[in-house]
Figure 1 (cartoon, rainbow, N blue to C red):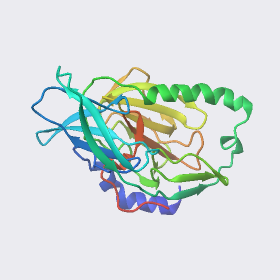
Figure 2: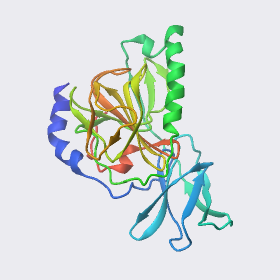
Figure 3: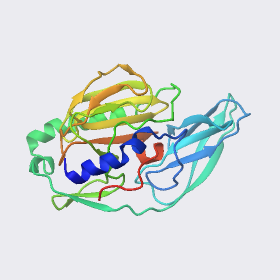
Length: 279
């Protein structure tokens, strides 16, 4: 780890590791979150966005829908639709998504197969992609705790949404937050949940998915060690692994993603964070 990262860790670790939010921040942009007020007196709400159920919660005595907005969404007007209780009447709640320009990050990867896999690699990658898709769309009615802990002490070395260029080749935008930290540092679950996927993946290295309820999912990649197994029930603050440098990486860090209704959204909306990050 460079001296710059070590210095930043000393400066921000206390702030970054302890601060939380009761519910995520609203950000009406691609990759953000819409928080939509619902009728608290009309019965149990059941709403969806693009045919996927959305998370329903209570905040300040108000029932709200918390909707994940995909990075691929175009600016414009959208709506969630559903009903209350056993009523058949369809209700629509509209909101507007604004444009956002994300920055570009250029990265040099020494292992060229992690940028341009050979056929042998693809025979491994394709089944792994299917497993990831299933895990990312997992849903159950379990009530979700939205007051997240930070999963690891560290500094942001790669922000959500950045367009990434590996060895001069444009790849998919970054779907999570990279937190630089020493190898072996403990990673904890930000909220209670159930481990739904785990394993060693070609690009992601040692990878872990946790479902926290109503389609709220967290993902942890590049771990050195995984401390839990599929099916385990984990508690808020429980250690689930350690920081590593497995998969497609340039150094030890945690790649952390947060999913809502099948879309990966900006994890920064779930936690308070330092005002600075590494470029």
